[in-house]
Length: 159
Image (cartoon, rainbow, N blue to C red):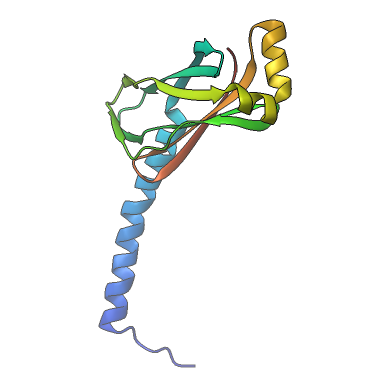
């Protein structure tokens, strides 16, 4: 069976593909490493207790221990009690630059939790808070690195 010679267009396409792989693979590996190295420290405190509910303050510090700078989206925070979501933060299209070998303390994220919602959605949580004066919750911090790589961190915290 005779081989057909490669056309000029085929050679150009093949060459472009090889160049794209040579550039793209190291870039993707670098992004993967950055997502593995990024550290997010999340703290949750009860900021205010009123007759109408709780106001939770979420403090997020992003740490970049790598030699590459990062652009990270404003984090979305999801709070769970016994595998049930009871509160979430707002979603913002805001970027933060984290310098290489640096960290960034973000503005506090305030999450309001009405007492009616606590009583109807998670009554166990309300009774646990009344009994112990604290809550054991799971906080998921979700963001995107360099507008490409999704990142999620899960913390178990007492507030």
